[in-house]
Length: 303
Image (cartoon, rainbow, N blue to C red; front, side):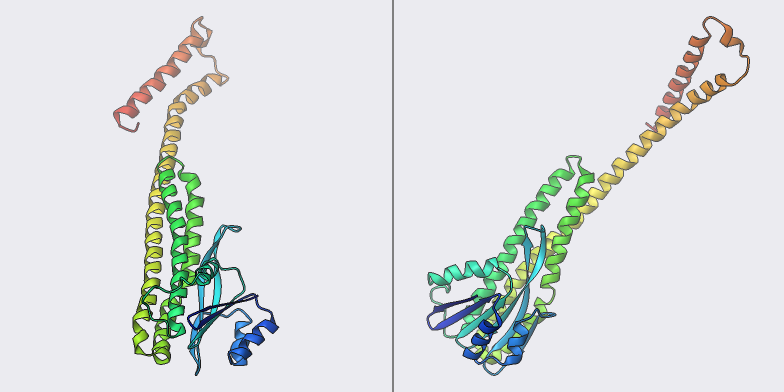
């Protein structure tokens, strides 16, 4: 599907799951080499930047939390940034691009008073929207972290192990998607200054700042999650130790009683058994030994 948007002489062409004919048409219209078109038609191995005579070719991956699988996935976006046009290609529906297109349609894409004499400024706002969307998704992870912290101290440490593991997997997927952005943006800075001029350096720095803010939030969430995992593990280990301790004490309390009962079960003639109060005497001895054992444990502060 091909969608075209224009603003003050700038054109944005968005290709969502394009067919070979649609891709070939756009490549011919904007004089994009065949080799670039072929690469845009298939999923790339990793992010990269290429400087061509009439455009910059940029590939970036952005994280997206899938509500169906409840985990984060990578979404590839290919950018061709010319002097007065931008072409984006992707093979999945991308919320940030959809929202960006709405602002384009009502002519509110660029801030008032900002230069818009080439497509570099358009790319700046587009990449800013993508990073904003990533941070919005990280806010939902922050909500999960707060809920996890609350439940940990409500005594549900066991069930929180799975919750913490799921959050950790989401953050790892985010980190995986953003892992090459710093290096790619550094390469893009060199290419963009050559293509658009040194004055565009300020906007490149702003793009890097958007990435840094996203990465900082991601790192912060990871640190909080690690602390929550340590706390949950400590509480879980303490509860396990208390359970083992209680079972051990019960075993020691029962042991003397078991010895006495086993003794009287032996095929031996005990005088006490033949007396009218023999049964009560045996029960009393068992109870007395259990009480003495309990008092001894309290004295030793084992209870």
